[in-house]
Length: 84
Image (cartoon, rainbow, N blue to C red; front, top):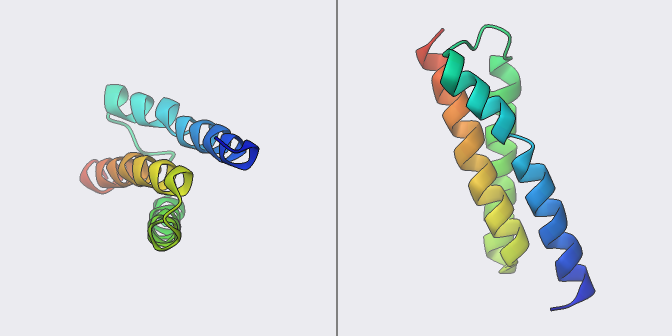
């Protein structure tokens, strides 16, 4: 594995894992009062575009990170809309 790919995977793990505490908190409390709907709409859109970009480049770190991040942010967004 190239050093550049190691950096990519490390970045992917850290940025993706950053959404896990928010997801767990929303899941447990069912409270989304303090979460910005606009921010999560923009984030989901941007992460989806990064995912498409990664697929086009055939870049595994970009695909994995943004695929998982999209699932997490979309789930939080869905809970925001559902529990509004």
